[in-house]
Amino acid sequence: MDGERLADRLTRLARVTAELVMADTVEAITKIVISHAADAAGANMATLTLREGEDHLRLVGIKGGTEDDARKWQTYPLDVRTPASDVVRSGERLVIDDAAAFAERYPNLTHPDRGERSVVCLPLHVSTRVIGAVGLAFPGSPTIESAEIEFFEILADTCAQALDRVNALEQAGRQTAKLEFLSEASAELASSLDYETTLVNVAKLAVPAFADWCAIDLVEDGRLNRLAVEHVDPAKVQLARALEERYPADPEAPSGAWNVMRTGQSQLVREITDAMLVAGARDAEHLRVARDLQLRSALMVPLVARGRVLGVVSWVSTESDRLYEAGDLALAEDLAKRAAVAIDNAELYSQTSAAAVRLQHAVLPEKLPTLPRWELAKFYSPAGRTEVGGDFYDAVPLANGQLVLFVGDVMGRGVDAAAAMARTSAAVRAYMVEDATPRVVMTKLDRMFEEYRTDQLVTLVYLVLDPTHDGIVMANAGHPSPFIRRAVGRSEELPFGGEPPLGAPAGRRQQETAEFHVGDTLLAFTDGLVERRDEDVDESRGRLREHLRLLAGPALSAALDELVGLVRDPSCDDDVAALAVRRTG
Image (cartoon, rainbow, N blue to C red; front, side, top):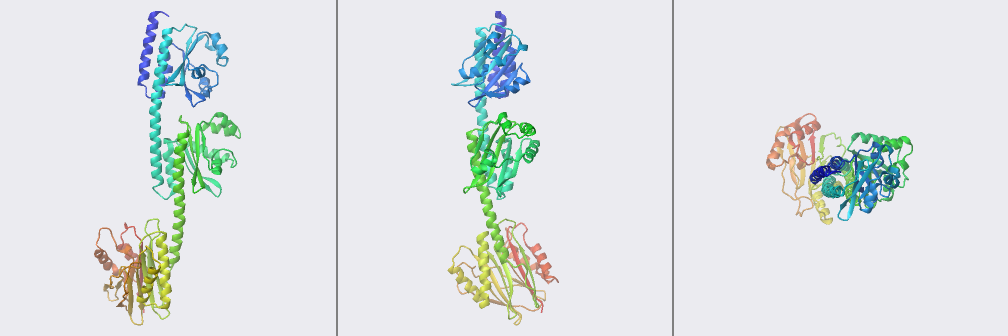
């Protein structure tokens, strides 16, 4: 080669080296090496091969080859003899300018239609590691000048540094994305007791931050039930489902989600090879669909809580170049532990909440008694929250013609509140059998709360309606005072002595009396009916008094529903219980 042509070629290679310094992605580096560098060097074929793990190489770019070349050498073991593998193993450059020598050394790479050529292959050094190789092939059998070889080596070193820089940036980006994904997923898991919706959202968060495909299976009656699945390509979700329906997984398989469920041990498949797909395929169609899914790498981790496997989370890499490693497995197991705790907590909450609901339903009367001289109506509406409240009520006729009413409210929510409600309601009914006098019943309740100390406070209003004497006798332990709507149209509030709730230190209980005639209507209720945020309690009770006229309606139950609808604060997150009784004759 004459000096002028050599100088021109070196100048063009220098420009390519400058381009590599500015490149910020592997794709950009690949294009520069196999296109710009090849053109500048006068090569008619160029390759860029990178190390993948310890034992494999991956052809990331090729110019001047065939589709078969790209497919055949996409990924291959390091011990397969090629110029790139020899260079990566030895760390030394390779120069062959004789076709016969090339054919003798690499008989499996000889292509008669490509004619004579010279080959230069250079290692990509990063510190003490060789991360890949650049290959250049020149038509004919030209002699490669030493100056060119030196510049090719500079080109290879610049390429290696660019790849190392981009890889470091990508790793930092991936690590940041993983941490962000873990943070977002953890926040999602802690946000709700609806674990099914939460896990669906976690699967969505995982794609594409941590996986191209995420599936969550929960164990139900010894079987895996698919709860959530997310894929970067929605069409692939249907393809995967069709594959599972037609070729269901073997529960006894030594690998896969079933094995993870049985053993409680995670499984990492760093690279899903075509050989694996062939080995696992049941027929040609099964293999075709499996290949269409483009599976590259997989992680499967168990959801374990209190020593019990609740399910399996699977993360799969498909279209992306992501290959899972030990660090990814650690992150996946961390998230799986949090998800399992969330599921377990939700199940425990559901069980205890269901028990509390059953307890509450057992305490609250399904319907009020039908009595000849009384018309009774009830209203009960739990708050919009999931926890069970502590409002309770009942109406009990006595053998002497009297009618006992009581309405109570346990301060707090959940199982403890439901238990206190059940305990107090049962005690009231038991004590009134011996002596229904309000002061007596309330005093016995105080003794019970003193004997069985609890953190629960209970407000309670207890009334005995006596038609023989046209009156009411009442004891009140810190509960909102009832109202009476008189037959003549006047409304009044029963007196409240300011006595403390049950569970608080109390002195001698008092009882109050009031008249109660035919046509009068009494309303007892919990504070959820009248209380509103940022409103004085007197104003709230005044609003109720104004609407008591509705209780004069012919149908007491409908009138009570209308009254509550007008008085209560729909935005207030509290239970409402109300009991109305009209003396009819």
